[in-house]
Length: 146
Image (cartoon, rainbow, N blue to C red; front, side, top):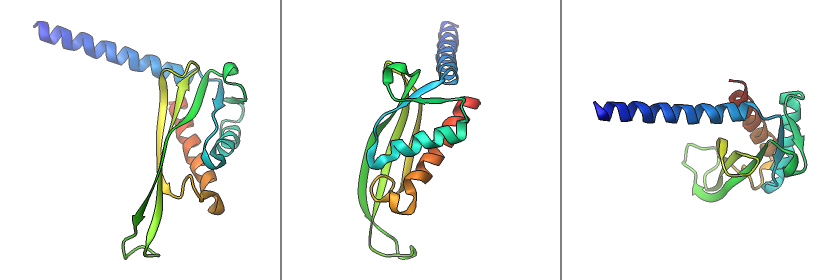
């Protein structure tokens, strides 16, 4: 009986904590976008303005923001393409993790991981950074509006 009570209390505390984080991301009105590789930060700022239509404002000083968006990790690896791909040989695959943190930078409010060819390096020649920013901001908007 004690184990059931402890489990129920633990589950309730976890749900309350998760609910508080969800409420926190919904309260964001001003966001600071930290510098990111290949100018991705500029594309993200433009997409926020385009997709949020004034519901979320980008600020240029972290002190003025309710939250901070930052690239948490960026990694690039070369892999060999399979023969059924258009070009055979080595391709650069990039992985990046973007997070929205509270204004102190201590709590992750939202996170999104990006996997794509040439996301960070060389992506701009085919509009890759813009595509990544579009997908990223779309997912952020969905998280805030849910």
